[in-house]
Image 1 (cartoon, rainbow, N blue to C red):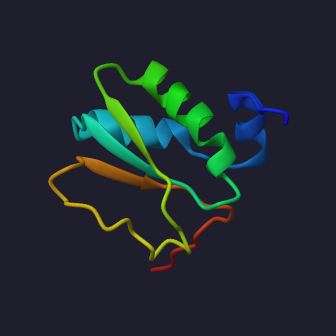
Image 2 (image 1 turned 90 degrees about the vertical axis):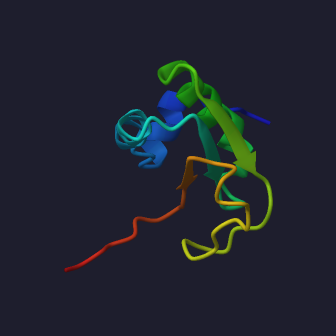
Length: 96
């Protein structure tokens, strides 16, 4: 199985790493849960490793439970994590 580099993944998907890193730093988040749909789970450790290198003194956890869309938020104790980041295959378009 070919493992994609972070550059390859970033070309194929819009992970918005700069926005994620900015949000982590702004909120001083230390424990972050990353949630991926099944199609992106094979790349979850590559994404987590990249984020670990980009944001020091931060722990990243990967949710390996189901994910059936943006409304499927992991059922965890809200005090366990400072931030939950959901990744998806498609952009969510929000309108005013």
